[in-house]
Image (cartoon, rainbow, N blue to C red; front, top):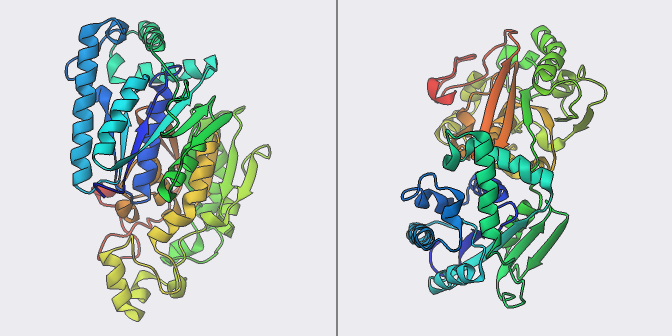
Amino acid sequence: MAGPGAMYLKFGPDIILCLCPLRVQNKDAQRYLQWLSIPAQTFNVGNYRRNDAPQPTADFFDTNNAEGERKRRAAAEAAVADMLAWFRTGGVVAILDATNSTKERRKWVSDVCAQHGIEVLFVESKCDDQEIIMANIRDVKTTSPDYRGQDPEAAAQDFLNRISNYEKSYKTIDQDGDEDEYTYLKIMNIGKQVIINRIQDYLQSRIVYYLMNLHIRPRSVWLSRHGESMYNLDGRIGGDTLLSPRGEQYARKLPELVRESVGDDRPLTVWTSTLKRTIATARFLPLHYNQLQWKALDELDSGVCDGLTYQEIKDRFPEDFAARDEDKYNYRYRGGESYRDVVIRLEPIIMELERSEDILIVTHQAVLRCIYAYFMKKDQAKSPWMNVPLHTLIKLTPRAYGTEEVRYEANIPAVSTWRGKGSTAKHENPTPESL
């Protein structure tokens, strides 16, 4: 919504970690909001600045560099102008990605937004943990456009120099007690201390709760469907059946895939659903892995269609079959769930994932599609058509500028449970756009 009542999410300031943690948080916030179908967009001032200064050295960010200051100001003004235009098209949450480490810059942002009836939530993430700082510098120097193609050590030193330049003018929000009128969230040392000021509505509270659960320590999430089940062989949906013989093979192979991807000594927590086929798939994993069962990870509830094939659903409930084909994301089975319902019940899982470190999730096709879409910033409305094959381990590693994906194939045959739109085929091969 544009105009009065519109919500504006502002990220900054952070001088200790500079752009590192904010880069993670703004990407995560946009991803989370879009996953919930809330129109959200990031306006990265650095991208605008790179039009005039593609790979500047740290001197560009020196407070005594008048030309650098002029270009940085112009970039911020261009980003805010585009942000305001985006609100007029129906945007709900805009994320202005910039340090805004001075009181003067924050006042300018606040005043401009107030003129357009836009609420501002400032978010400051501050950290003095040197290990975390260096981990983020390593991430940025390998993924940031500012350092692409440069020597890693030289990039790291330049980035440290850039931080030093920001420190010269940095003022933490409300440091002098004269910014109390702002709505803000301050997170110190990855959540060890949190200060919340003037949070007033539901959406702000939801965003704050999400951000409080984030951390920027390196971690990965591994995703796997259960091994092939007896219902998979028959082309039936739902149920609580056991694994097929090939599914049993995958259960025995999974520890090897995990060891190849995770290593022997790295701590890992395993989450499964409460259904037999996921628990059976995870039962051969090392005993020192803590295993938890989540009802929220159970497969999409197909209601009266549970245990039926797609052909049987078409024969018994032709109108429902057509309606689901038309809008698979929003269609709710009679007495069951829709993909949208699954996203809502997965929100606590997402919160727990964001506050945890390395996690392996063994669950079901619809659930993994929703989780995968979240991490990969995919349109949730398209998630029902994504290909998440059986007998495959997927490793997702969130980075500053996106999520890296690696797939490990077990090389154990399994049926395809992917189903094309408008088709009643028992087992199909996915179309290229679903891969």
